[in-house]
Figure 1: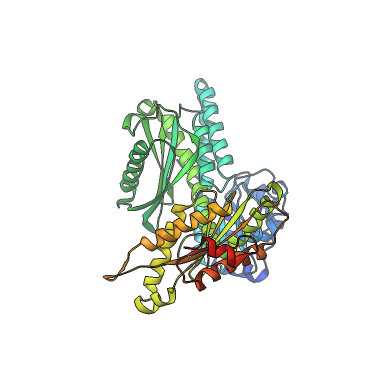
Figure 2: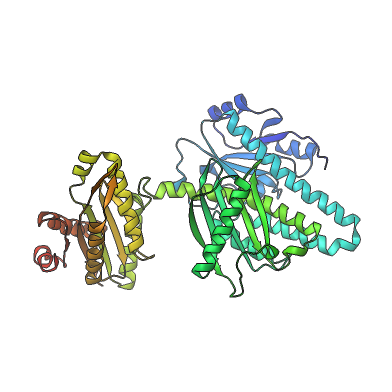
Amino acid sequence: MNRENKDIYFLLLDIPADIEKQFEENCPSGCRIVSLKELEKINQESGPNYPAVFFIPVEKWENISTLDIFGGDLSIQVVLVVTERTSLDAYDFPPPENFLGYLYLPVNSKKLAYFKNRVAEVHNLYLDLYHMAREIALERELLARKNEQLTFLNRILAKATLSLDVSEILDMARKEFGAVLETKALLGVFWQAENDLEAQIYLPSTSPGLEQKWIEYLLQASQRFNQKMIKNYQVNYLAYKVEDCLLKPQTWQLILIPLKIGQKTFGALAVVTSQASNLGRDQVQILQSAGNHLGLAIRNALKYKKVRIQADHDGLTRVYNRQSFDKRLRLELKRHQRHGHSLSLLMLDLDYFKKINDTYGHLAGDMVLQRIARLLKSTVRETDFVARYGGEEFVLLLPETSEEDAWLLAQRVRQNIQKIIFSFQGKKFNVTASIGVASLKPDPFTPADVFINRADEALYLAKNSGRNMVCTTGGHMVGRQCLQKCN
């Protein structure tokens, strides 16, 4: 299909002069940097749907009217520029409907070339839709079907960029695919282009045996596109429920749609449908086009998820960090005050942890912290909250949990830690933990620092009473209550 070679316009809105200079010095060939004042002239010269992208500081976006800038033309993409003074966590608003990505300073030619290629790809998608509309006009007997397909693609394009949650995007795609073919389920597997050893798998909840078969199928599909075996993966469960008639993976009921960024395949969608073996050529093309639209949205969502995890989680243990714990604690205290449910907090400290680092080295210490974090995550409920509080300390926030139940859980955690035999460079050793328990019964609001201090006092008492034990505050009678319950 012939396409006109058009300049790609970089439209700078409220970009500081020093950053604008970086754009001018690194502007790729085939691109033009223009100001907002020149936009009307470009519209007259180029007509609608010309390849362009707005670069807007992220702190400015919330106060900008989309219609005022784009005039309803959603072929113009948006890149939010993250300046040194900007923190993404400070801005809690949905990204633009035609969001292309974030640009982190400094500006260089490689980054601008990347966005040039992305804009060209998106523009080509609009040209595909345009030529498809012309074909519909020429082939009147297929008008109804082509209109239905065009509407489907427009819905996919519009809705896919409304969310930065992969599960929501896949659930939307499953529902929209139902407009062009009978769709029983939609699953996905995605891997990092720079690291093909770890993948994210998305599938609906089903029986354990059937789930494992689908995991194996998706991993084999990833190997087919990636040419390498993925050994590590994480399973994410989609919100919708599958019908009981969902069978094990079979070729006759599966459509596999690769997702690409440029020439690199980073994932695949598996559509379960009884029509897989008798699709028409136009249906195959429409699914491929839908995959192109979804690929960009899913890639952005995966990057957003990675950024959020890095911001909210401890880099070593992959549990939540201190900052996330402070936010969650304030939220749970408000719920406790509003509903009057019990709330408990465990503060855990590994005994003589410095000795482990001194004897076996800090790599051994890191291994211990990672193993303990995995144990804590596998022990608590989904509604509980595990975080690394600092150093060798962890906290477990337990909503709707009485002091007695919290103490029993703490004992189980302490005993499980004691049973672990760690091995590092041929040397084996054990670790013990002291745990302090604090609980709030339905009563007037307790400040967060007071609640934490109670757990810290109980932990201090546990460590000073011989370590490898659990102590509870029992209200304000710290010592007596602890002695009653410590082992």
